[in-house]
Amino acid sequence: MLIEVKGFILKETPYGESSKIINVLTKDKGLIGIMCKGAKSMKSKLRSCTQAFTYGVFNLYYKEDKLSTLVSVDVIDPLKNIRQDLTKISYVTYLSELTSQVIKESGPNNIYDNFINTILKIEEGLDPIILTNILELKYLPLLGVGLNLDGCIRCGNKTSIVTIDASYGGLICKDCFQNELIVDKKVIQLIRMYYYVDIKSISTINVKDEYKNTINKFISDYYDSFTGLYIYSKKFLETLL
Image (cartoon, rainbow, N blue to C red; front, side, top):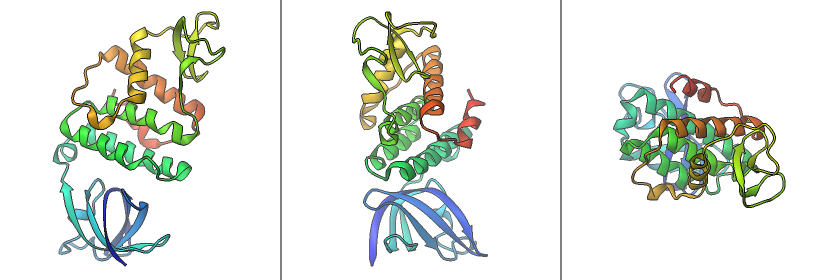
């Protein structure tokens, strides 16, 4: 069946001497594998448009639960700003790997729009660290470990919140506080905003480095404590901070 699907190449894998297989996150079909015959050849029209991070409309012979076969690609956005910036490439690499892992755990539901909007905002020049943290938070419910930001994780108290702790999994009030690290109230407000914001609606992002670094560490620690995911490219990102 010949179809068109809008999607984003998360990964490309060489296949044989001249072909490759691409994993494409699509809006309508979830994550699909596509055989790209001859795409490694210098003369192939498919060579440039089957690279990782290609965002376009894929024309293909679709086979459900099997490898589909690519016919052509109409690029929607070449993502030139991302491709010319090593830091942005590193963040998109991590987000692509993370998204693949989330899909394995939860299926493709509610992933495509948030992922694509995050990539496009990075392309626009918005802070990739903040956008990455926002998407990481939005993936938590899909992994079954969503944050409870309504009250103390220990007693449920909705008032007198003094900090947020990754190892315990959420907010802590003054009555339950022991020896956890105290964070600025602005950090808690920003985490709550990150958790609920519509990524597509974001036009500007201005967060102090102090808050940004604290939030990034909290999310990394939370992932380490509760998701069971290990993503190598995340460790590389930590060297960029």
